[in-house]
Amino acid sequence: MITVDALSKIYADTSRGDLLAVDGVSFSVQPGEIFGLLGANGAGKTTVLRILSTVLKPTSGTALVAGHSVLDEPERVRQKIGFVSNNTAIYDRMSAVEMVQHFGQLHGLSREEVRARTELLFRQLRMEDFRDVLGAKMSTGMQQKVSIARALIHDPPVLIFDEATLGLDVLVARNLLQIIRGLREAGKCLIFSTHIMSEVERLCDRIAIMHQGRILDTGTLTELRDRHQEHDFEELFFSLLSRHEEQAPEAGIAVAENQAISTAESMPKGRATGVGKS
Image 1 (cartoon, rainbow, N blue to C red):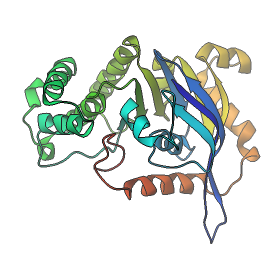
Image 2 (cartoon, rainbow, N blue to C red):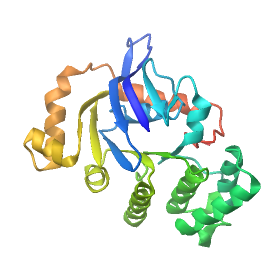
Image 3 (tube, one colour):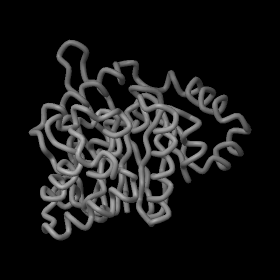
Image 4 (cartoon, rainbow, N blue to C red):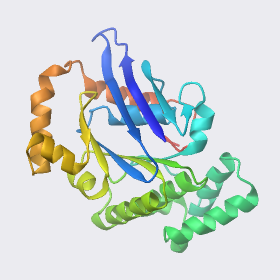
């Protein structure tokens, strides 16, 4: 469903030289699987996901989503994905139901399809009690549910969650993880990016550990523990990072990651994917 091969992203910087945000990343994700991208802030996770969602173009390498190239068929890719992040903005003057229906219309659904999908999602996500609340008056948990609903309105086969639990309280974050598990059971292909190790331990079928733009290792939790002879996943993570730290350039991976976000937010607003600020 998702195939990434030797993906790289370089930013030109006249004062620092080239900034390497993503360095030859390769992985694949199947339907009914949650693939975790684990790494510290600035590891390159968001850059990879924004390339997959067609907001950024790779410098080299290929990426296919549901059989479509992110470079050659960006519109087809956007039809196949839903994107949820921790900073997906909400329209202050639109109600929850208006926002979700608006994104359904952007995806070309008929009025009947939009209405039926909206009612289904509002029941599944338990949003009925704030369907008419304006974005400006929503709590963080309400806003996150709206972000999820509008990412799901067109029933995409691929879902991307980029640090989606960041800033949420414990109960809301727990509910979000339960929703993601339900999407896996429905056969969706999911990428879950986070820097919180406990989340990938509880949620992900396979894990890729990223550091300074590279994937250091990939596998199930059991495979990673066996391969590195370390049962404590936190110790495994930091040990792996320390052993590889000197192998990657020191040229500001975190800076390049921030540039990726700034680039995405400078794109024309209102993309149907909901990626970046709205």
